[in-house]
Amino acid sequence: MKDEELLRYSRQIMLPEIEVGGQERLLNSRVLIVGLGGLGCPVAMYLAAAGVGELVLADFDQVDLSNLQRQIAHTTDRVGMNKVDSAKATIKALNPEIKVTCISTRMVSAELYREIEQADIVVDCTDNFTIRFEINEHCVVTKTPLVSGAAIRLEGQLLIYDPRVESSPCYRCLYDTAEEGTLNCAENGVAAPVVGVIGSIQATEAIKLIIGLGESLAGHLLVFDAKYMDWKKLRLKKNPKCPTCHSSSQ
Image: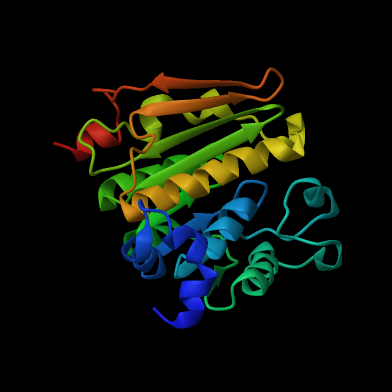
């Protein structure tokens, strides 16, 4: 590591759980972030600040004025800009040493598969259940760890799929069909800090998975209720009839 990197990441390196070895693993990692909205913004910013070497940002939407209440990587003067380009500008201002690749078009399944296959970790920050299922399926097939978060109104949740943990359920184990979770922020609203809370935890779990730090949330569903400041860590078992991870393990 260069002297500048040792100084930049010194507060992380001094942690016995990370040290120089853990920081080097971060610097050598590639993370795919799908969705640069309320969740993806804090995820991208914290991973960049923490020193993840390469971030691949995927989002085909443009910055809208209504996004600025919660999507903190974007600014008023970037309204109309592609979200990935806006996020890249923010990331580069935070940490110019990070490599950032932008995908501003809607990926077909084969393209998404290739990107997931090349990633060390995938962070799902979308609000579309069809896309969530597709990301999950590709992660199961490629055996790529997945950090999936969601936030709506005053609530949030987080799930980890880690193929290295034999009993780790996938996202499809939680939701059998896309119709079970069709809520989105545009129709139901969301409090700005809630997405920040969930996005920050997603970034934390991604860092832990890269370094091999502590225990991840694999095998659990973390549920947050901001109205009553209530957290629940629920045990989530692998669904033996899951059409995604059950068939993949055969």
